[in-house]
Length: 95
Image 1 (cartoon, one colour):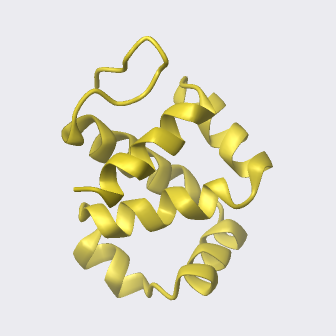
Image 2 (cartoon, rainbow, N blue to C red):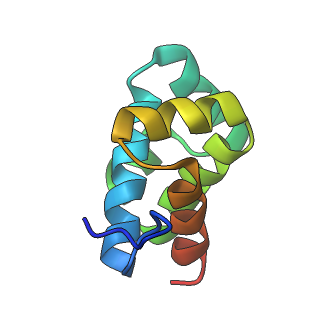
Image 3 (tube, helix red, strand yellow):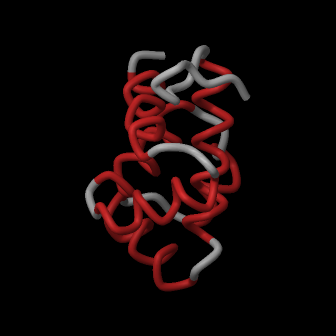
């Protein structure tokens, strides 16, 4: 995935890659995954069937944005800046 100098995604495909990685990080913890489902209204079958759709990935990134400690932890795990995840959400919402 390519990131700009500000560490944001260069393309929609880059935003999708960041979103998918963030989704993986989010669901790697059962409690966090449950909060994602409860907060977004998504179901496990929604995630399985629609995981790569921009609106689902934007919802995941928005979920992370809503709780800064998770946003920061996810970005650190992924090796990017939190701003890259925020930029990816904006890119996905406009896709």
